[in-house]
Length: 307
Image 1 (spheres, one colour):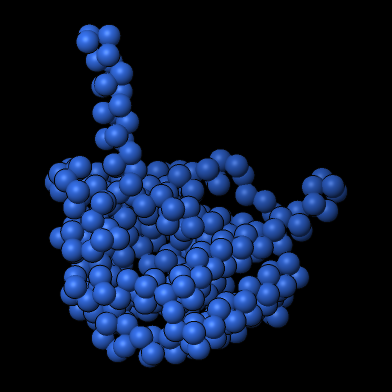
Image 2 (cartoon, rainbow, N blue to C red):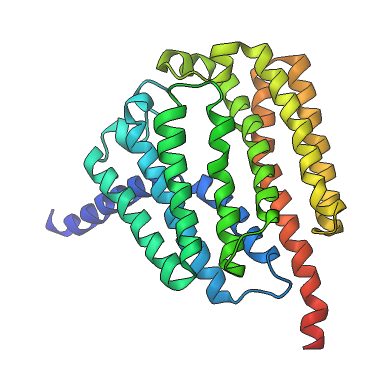
């Protein structure tokens, strides 16, 4: 028995660690880091240093993870009423609410200091503004009160782009806001398609998502409208010379595919069609901003050759 104790302790420690990692919602953090990296890479013609990239992404990951932990803390009672979220650490009782709150606050504090001292204080301020926007405006205020919560709340998803841009330049300009508009237009198709699949759960939990308040038909129409708007907004950077041909081809191809998925959802009106669109939106955002990074990285090759 004593020989088995160390292993048992390790298993328990690993389980506790996994629970805290789950609080940060790592998959959503990874998607936000792709957009932050895109903002960092495209802000200047020359390549940023590996140290700047590392500090920006580490600070951004902690800020996003801390915001997600605070989201889980505020949503813990709602999460108990939904099958999709009932197994999360807080509703499952794996972590005490006070510890989750302290964990989220600590992550945000460390992120602010890391970005402030390691990058610049404007980047740190924007990261914390994103945390407050997500936690207070979206989670605490909009989500339980308005069917347009994901539309207005989409502004929080645009903040990593601004952080990345400011990390590279030390100042803001119109372009990161335009790239942020892409994320804002992307947010409704992404979340409303999931809400269509989980409509009954949202209704039972008392969350006024669009399918619950205005019906599935109107939600499918809104998804189609936002998908078309996203296609238009996403091609502008390439048509104005800000982005290159890789981004142009990707934005057109992925945008058209998203519109096709939206039309399919409009006419088929099935959970399967909604789920396909939801999964595609994840791939869409990753590839779109990945192509933006590739476009700029392709321009570094001649500079490195000359250097």
